[in-house]
Image 1: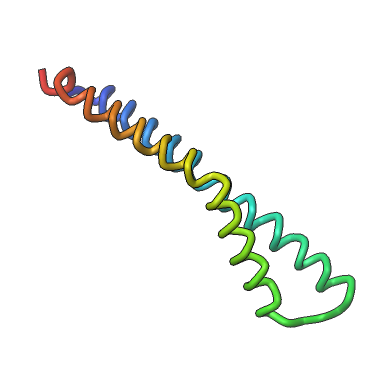
Image 2 (image 1 turned 135 degrees about the horizontal axis):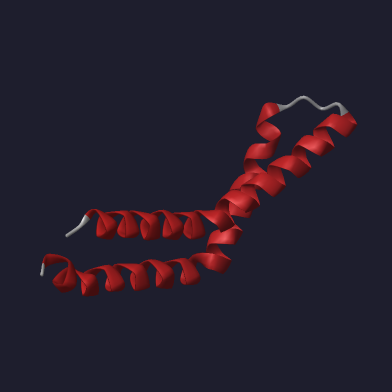
Length: 89
């Protein structure tokens, strides 16, 4: 196993982590921005107002993208295990 192999695996791992976290993070970001905009326009300063919409939005994002996320993670894991013989030899 060379340094190049380790860096390649680390890069693949970071890209998969970015792809898997993107739907949840983008959903929370958009909902948080919309709630903040609403709060600034109405001058409501309630910190707990954004919690429930974000929770519901992240749950919906997980429902819609959960299957894709699971298949992406399983594919990455399968590819990683397939690379083991070439890395050790």
